[in-house]
Length: 177
Image 1 (cartoon, rainbow, N blue to C red):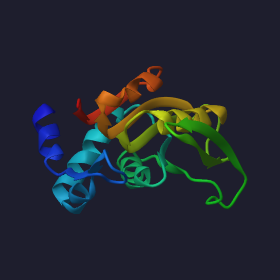
Image 2: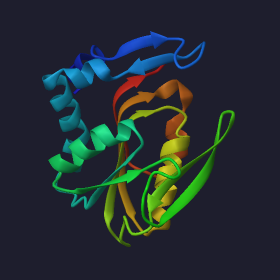
Image 3: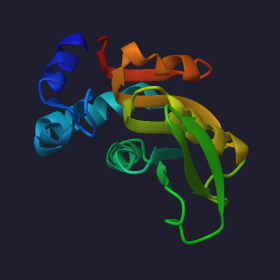
């Protein structure tokens, strides 16, 4: 898989100083625009979970929706979005979590996950792990059984994996610096 990971990494564009000075943003839009790269990325995210009886794939707003729905389709599973406050129309459960500077809040429909359902968490990028950890807490609070966490890109130097050490974590492309 290493050669294919390098192939996919070739579609990731580095954008310096976005969204703020000092950040090297990993832009996935060139990968999304290439049919072969997109299909390969989805296959790599889904493949380790085939035959694991995943009921639901969960993705967080907004890029988690892109890969989450594609992986759900590949696994013949349902998809559940986790959104920013005020975006979901029915009754929600929310979690507020710490960011580097301040806090953020995410919400899920209270009836989105049934107790005991096997859930795969999917996102485009793992940085510090705060958002994914909060998403996992929301799913667990509804009784979901988290079968794994799959991300396209891991910024390994930010140690987000530490916040997710209780889960089976798969990353396709890992940037160590």
